[in-house]
Length: 154
Image (cartoon, rainbow, N blue to C red; front, side, top):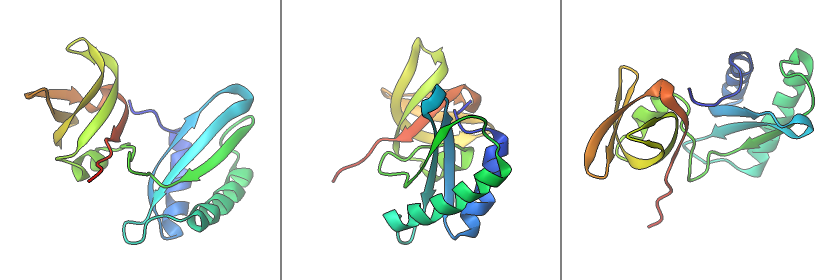
């Protein structure tokens, strides 16, 4: 299963971020004691994301999280654009980037490998189809721990 923030946190964040006019790409929570991190990815396909956009979303999210308190303990809030190596969190993200090269980290190995770089060929019925070294392979979406686009520099 792709590593994301808890369902409760995602349910709080998505409508807030989208209500501010941004695409909510996803969020990940990295528990590390006093140095835990909640990273939220936002986008605007038309204009991209500026530091001001991140600051605006950060203020609103911080206020909401202070009131709702869905994460116990100390953590740092980070709001970011998805960048060129955009993370893929949901099946819709995989559908959107068919034809692109992606990097995956799997929970359980496929063909003896947990880390793969391959072309994304299809996404349907919870299966991700990849072209890996000239061969088609299918990976169960729930076996993907982390996925992101491989940046293309022209």
